[in-house]
Length: 160
Image (tube, rainbow, N blue to C red):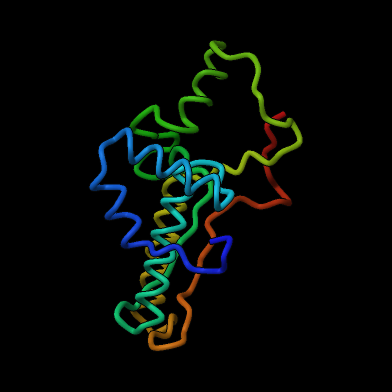
């Protein structure tokens, strides 16, 4: 928080879940603005990651944090291109591919950091195996292993 205190994740989540939807949205927006997050979704990811890291550091949970970028359709299995729904990035891709969308508000030079779902699943399974094999030490004072599942900046796609 601006005063140097830590936002209490469990208490904040309990407060938001116990409030009416309108009040919860208002309170979440105030926290988002105070902390400089772009939206409540990123705040919720931050709170969850802080909770996992705290429990890991206390030795109460042996964990690893996987940070995927934008999750997209499968690269290979069970079928290349399978996406199962039209949420998120998939809807944007379908809109452009079908001709329904012809422009984007994104900077054309920005990286379109889309990672196939099966690649993210492999990263999660690999991280879990690493934790199980002792690759993420658990105990007071240790930080959890963090794995990024994101695209390369060398062979990337750009919005343009």
